[in-house]
Each structure stands twice: as structure tokens, then as C-alpha cells.
Length: 304
Ligand SMILES: [Zn+2]
Image 1: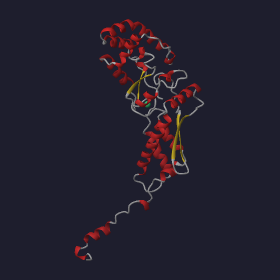
Image 2: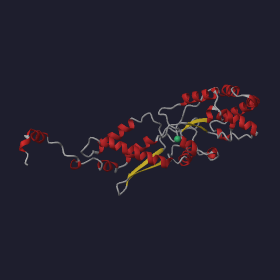
Image 3: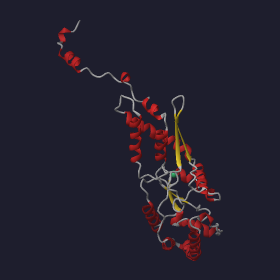
Image 4: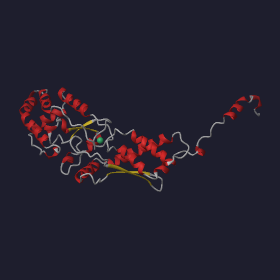
């Protein structure tokens, strides 16, 4: 759930280069199809910011195969177009726009290439996504009501919508619950879409697991050299310091939501302090004077 730079490449020229790189029968088919493909490109643009409103077109099996082949069988122009798209839209930090958790290593077709083969190489239909999100995103994710946020064209509100409720139960277990906050200043259809996206990609389970890991790492870091409990303001400072380090992360990044949630959790202080080793549990400090005295003792004095 992040707004990315929309691709600005010349998609018409890209298609012509890609079809020219094909051989034999496919090349002829694609040359004949070019004007119809360009009409479909224009239709995609006319329907922005909601490309999913473009109705699917029926292509004969031969045409369908040739169009899909433009993506599935790499040529120098198609590889160059994908590399350029990745370079132009690469965010920092480099994360999948659907989950904001993992590195994107695959291309997702926002409108499924099986249903829209003419858009299989169209830059604004290609989203650099992580493998788990790409696998979870089914062909019907763009059917109404849509279950995926479009990172290029959807209005992503400035205010944080991904929230995390952190709490510690009676057994001393920390739990993190992520959800979409129904901000009254955000139009309900946008919130509904975010909620469907969150559920569709099963982000609650993934964030809960990853959240537990980063909280654990955070605590280990801050208690490492400590042997007295944190005062509340000092723990708050450590959390603020962590959040300052995430200042370039997207507003709805799960790490930001996690640490904001910890800051609001009153029992987190006790949870952390329970992990600060008390003096008695620490290894006894070395008594240097006694050690020196023992080393100075002549060996012959040892009892037999
Ligand atoms: Zn992802």
C-alpha cells in the first residue's frame, strides 16, 4: 500500500520493438494486431485511475498465444523495457508495494495476463512485487469489488491507515494486532479497498510474525549493556530513535505501525524491563585483587 512513480515509457514504441524481435509466424500475427493492441492501450489510459474497468477482449487462440509470448519469451527489447521500468519505478527502501515487507523479485500483471494478453508488456500494468504477494494475488483480485491497491494510480492518503495494537497479556506475552484504521477523514470506499487488500494478501499473519521478530531484535539491542530498569521516558526515547530511522519509509509501512503501536502500549515498559537482567542474574564481576594474589602465591604452598 504505497504510491509509486507511474511509468512514463513510450509503450507504443516498446510494443513495436518487441514484436519486431519475434520471428516467422508470430511476427506477422503481431504486426497485423498492432493497431488493435494500440486501441486497447488507449482504452487502458482512458480508464485510469481504474484500469480494471476495461472489459476483457476475446482474442483467438493464435492471437492470444502471440500476445502472451511477448512477455513469456524474453527478447532483447522486452528485457530492456522491463529493466528500464524497474529502474524508473524503483523505490527506496526497495520493497514490494503490496505488502511493504519483502523484496520484489517478480513482475505482477495488475490485470492478469491470461485475461488481458495485450497488456502483458504494458509498463503501467506491470508491478514489481514479491513472490508471496504475486502468488496470493489471484486473477479475480481486480474484479469488483477490487481486492488490490494499484500502486501507480490509487490515491493513497497521507495519514497512516495501517495501525498496530500492541498489548501484553496476563502471562506476559506480547501480542501485535494489525488492522486498517477507519479514519473519518478518509473516504469510506478507500478504506474498504485497503481492508480488502489487507485481507486478500493475508497481511495480518505475515506482519504478526515479522513484527514479533523486529520487536525481539529491538529489545535485545536496547537491553544489551543495561542492568537497571528503563524509566518510561528513556524507553520512549529509544522508540522515537527507532522511528526516526524509519523516516523515509512509506506512511503505511508495517515497521512504522509496529513502533507507533509499542509507543502507545502502557505495559510495554514492564515487558522490556522483565528482560533487563538484574544484577544478581549476571555473572559475578572478576575480583582483580584476589586474582592477582592467587597468581602470586608460590606453587609449593599448595596443600598435598
Ligand atoms: Zn509483497
